Length: 152
Image (cartoon, rainbow, N blue to C red):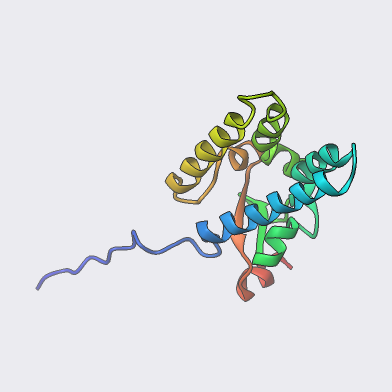
């Protein structure tokens, strides 16, 4: 009699957000930041920075991009939703790159490096967490019906 071992390596953690969904949500947020920069003369840069830092604390752990794609930022332990403090912590790497972006000629390099670094960490982490998530002790989950019931 042979024992058959099941391979659980391809099973994803319940509620874990798909990487493509996270990328789409972040692109939507970057578009919103671009609109703020262009739409609000003189203060648009700061409005964009504020949205970048605080966005994940809006709408019960969701930026506008995450809300549209049905993702949510929660604490790693316990699963309660992220607040403004955690949003600032988890988006600090992007905010630092955003601030350095104003440096003439080489400013575009910083956001590119942060995007690559954070993306590689997110892909390489089994829970899909990037450096910002490690700082804030958060993770991004998909909003399935069972996920929403466990948060409520």
